[in-house]
Length: 491
Image (cartoon, rainbow, N blue to C red; front, side, top):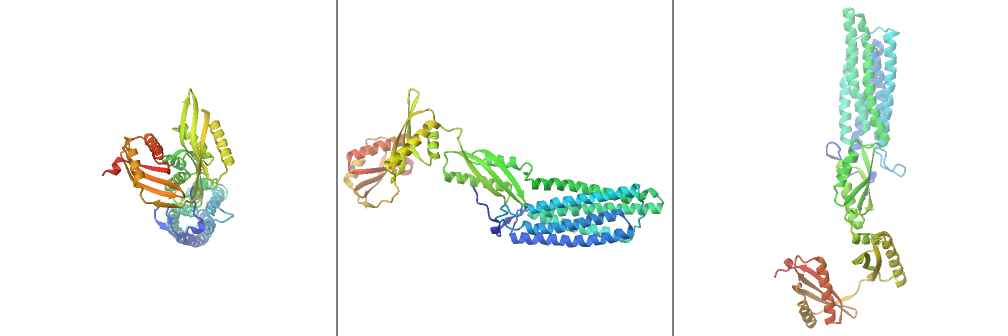
């Protein structure tokens, strides 16, 4: 269970997805907007040059490139708008932020590219078969297309660098546009060169090189459009990244305490992922331990998807190694109760359970008894092997008692140490402290026992010693014994 950062608070540090560096949210916004603005200005200049030269030369290749660049200008403006909107913090109406604007921007750019293809193919077919157009290749045409390649190369690298740095789909789509411009411009130059060569060599069939070059441009655009379409549609439909879900399941399954991974859902908005997981935990774990495990799971997911917003939902599950004692405790825990000192006797296949249950000391007996009755009925229903249950009700203190330490009572202490000799496995008694709470005498002590003594035997010894000490001194109201291993008390 993690508390996601509010977007307005993410002004401190953001991890770079691809470079492992850190940036402030302000730096990210400024750099993304600057490179998008530069792309717009470059698109304006290139489009105007291509339109001018395309009209003067009559080259369909150049005119198709001009149209392509014009749509790239529209795409660049949409990209600039999208990066400005996508960086806005989450609000009451957009609780996952505005990152989807970048995905939608990329989707629009895909549509614009496909419109470019339709016009180019239509005009190329018309010039090939129905309407011949004489071209006038010029130095200006070659110069403009060469200049276009240089500018497109510069802005494509700039956009891709910032897109990779901040994992921006809108900037990446823009960079992909301009990278295809490089190839398509090169094809147009080749087409013009072939037309010029054909004219010099009087090869009439080479006049078709320009519309053929335009068709090649359309093929490049279709290829790019198809790639963008798949990416943007997947993002808009919240498709999980390929292989990431299984990677998360494998990693989370290795977290200590996770019994199973019930559900993993991943969605992306802009450059940020949102992950929603449901994991099975042993139903006997404490709330604190459950919180620790969910934090570990969230950290594991963030190692795979940096800066992800992760929500982990723990679900109680019965462990494969769960015994009847665990099942009894689990039923009590589900009612927000804790039982202890559970003992089970088998009477010819019929199990009898005895247990201790602490309830608030201020609770009236009738209400306390009703709660115990409900608990016992629930246990018999969920653990059908149980034939009968007897619950010892204890009062759980809810007030702090005023105590006064009593000076050492040498006579009682001497009798206590003599009683210890009756128990061979108790090697030593020390740190005996007397306290008086109201008119009651409390005593606490430390007892040394063998290191390898089973805990069940330790408990039996402490219970027997407590009974024996109260027999020797009826004045003792409560005896608290702390067991210690012998290696901790080497004297």
